[in-house]
Image (cartoon, rainbow, N blue to C red; front, side, top):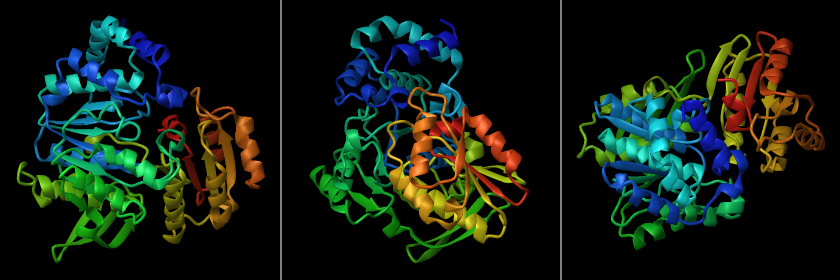
Amino acid sequence: MNYKKTLDYLYEQLPMFHRIGAAAYKADLGNTIALCKLLHNPEKKFKSIHIAGTNGKGSSSHMLAAVFQQAGYKTGLYTSPHLKDFRERIKINGKEIPKEYVTGFVNKYKTDFEKIQLSFFEWTVGLAFTYFAEEKVDIAIIEVGLGGRLDSTNVIRPMVSLITNIGFDHTALLGNTLPKIAAEKAGIIKSRTPVVISQTQPSVKNIFSGKAKKSNSKIYFADELFIHEEEYYFPAKGLTKHFYLHNNKLLSITCDLAGIYQKQNIAGVLTVLDLLKKKFKITDSTISKAISKTKKLTGLHGRWEILSKKPRIICDTGHNTDGIKEVINCIEREFLSGIVKGKLHVVFGAVNDKDLSEIFTLFKKNKHFSKANYYFCKPNIPRGMELLVLLENARKHTLAGRGYPSVKEALQAAKNKAKPDDLIFIGGSTFTVAEIV
């Protein structure tokens, strides 16, 4: 099979959560354990950092990868989902896994893997771990796909575990309360392995502390160690400068991921790096340089990404309630900064298992989103929410807008209507953003 046929096989023949939803989720690690045994346990052949959380794990993963790359280490990075090309999920030093490696791996193991009946994600984990082992990476940054306890990546023995934050997402699979969701995320905490919590949340703090105690693992709450003091936003450059108080010293970090929500993620990243400084040669200067050019070093897209200046066009992959709250805060900052003086236009598409009532209620309560022009669309995946369903949801919340058959047509309509001082925001789903970046 060539690369295209290989991808068609992976997408069409194997369950894939991000395309078909809960049917692809497997509530045990049996397949992954069998997979790793067949591959001669590649997960044991490289050092790693394991990252879970509802929001922020992708940004945190890329910042950590950027720092190790900047420090001169051969750095593997495994994340999901991808935006454009499957190979974005698996990188070494910011370069995507070669097409030839993907096709060779699938052709080699296709028959054996079919006997195990692997999911798409299990295939991908086996591919990533084998690639990192064969390439002898110095360290791999591994982001969980869903949850933590039963996620296919949860067979590694990391040097540090990082949990970013806990919010409501995938509740049908992970639980309908924050403590239940936190318990699933806490599943990545390993015996005698330090764990970092990026954001202290009183409702779930005891869940993490309790699991760490049972595991004889030290736990670090990052925002209590790196205390965020102040933030400056440079809208023209899409940069933020954060000041943290740490050990009675003021530390400044410039970040090219400009979302307000990055302040918690940065604290988590800094804490992880602080724990690993004795094992890796990483200086404060290296950390500062790397985080300021995370996107350039790792190829990250879709996190508060500025696509155009007049009109200002920004996209963000935030798609659950907490993510949308942060998006709203960032939009407010755009208007307060004075760089946007006109009207808000929102290109919005979602997936069909998303409850939009809370998100649309947030929009209705905000002065800019309540008066915005909406351009509703369906992402081009099987899970994309049908346009009529999306429009009906919007109608119930009296959000004014029209429907368009594709994301690109919706964006073009917004561009046609927007004036130079207006702001066009594109979001609602990773898959909506993927079609325009």
